[in-house]
Length: 93
Image (tube, rainbow, N blue to C red; front, side, top):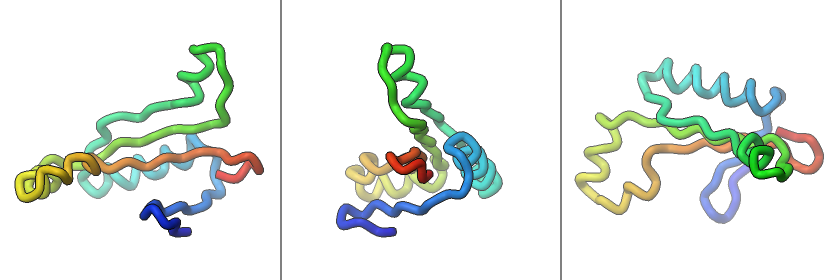
């Protein structure tokens, strides 16, 4: 699903961790690097709060991203790439 802000949402049949594991495997298989994986729900628990499963994967490749930023440095705001996986109120991933 595409929304008006340019974000693409795709429903997954897997739970949040497995969805991100599968994406990470695909990303590294394409020669990209995983820079970070952030578990926002775990952070919320550490702060004494609750959040449905929510994880962010940050990935890319400096060989591809650097030329884009050299040409147009403002591209840095979108790089590296990010993928957010979350469980919505209805339990959909």
